[in-house]
Length: 313
Image 1 (tube, rainbow, N blue to C red):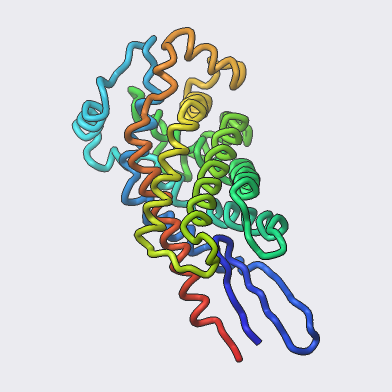
Image 2: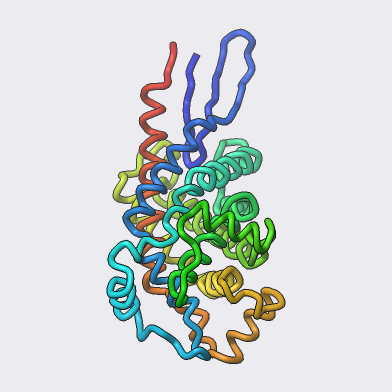
């Protein structure tokens, strides 16, 4: 009897001599490893996420508080110390494991259904599986997690911050706005996460298939995996940063100014111009490239280790 884990989706195939059937099932406990990897990455790169969010919330009409990335960092450290750059970190940490579980779990389920007879997943089907995974993670985890994060970061820039910590902030949001308050900007979040994962898994699947050529068992060096992941992350940043800006505005403390996702987009274009849709691109690019590279490297290496140790004869 042989047990194998397949990449890019963690899967176990048990082939038994009696009866002669193939049994396929998910390995959900190992999905949390992706969440742990994501948690480590978030702790390292969160300051870039903080700066990106502040720049996206900074409206030209107000007038803007920050002259750029360096000025945003300087003002934050001067006013709140280095810890200020980690405001809102807890919401992403608490959500990292369930987000990874939903993302890779749904991608595994969909890709297992869409592989061809040889077990290969082409880039188009990889895009569709990524889209499904992104939409699922947006609805189940990302929207409430991102809403809390944005409100925390926005709250710090106000004259009298009202949130004393993660749990106090969540209680206040639910008390004043109800559960709907944690699901602001759902449409924009679904569009952003869906396009995020569709682009990333499409690029990763395309690059993996190109690299392996006619040999599906060809090993990929972790550095190559990291480079592919960073490139996939960069493509997604340039492809959907406008949606990220709209999502951030819809989840901020002044979200009441917008009637809908479309209304938010129209007002940004009208009052700030098209360049506003790419606010925070540079810090987001730095974080996302590192994020995707790290997660895919760890994910692939865990699969390799499991293939070596999870065997019975």
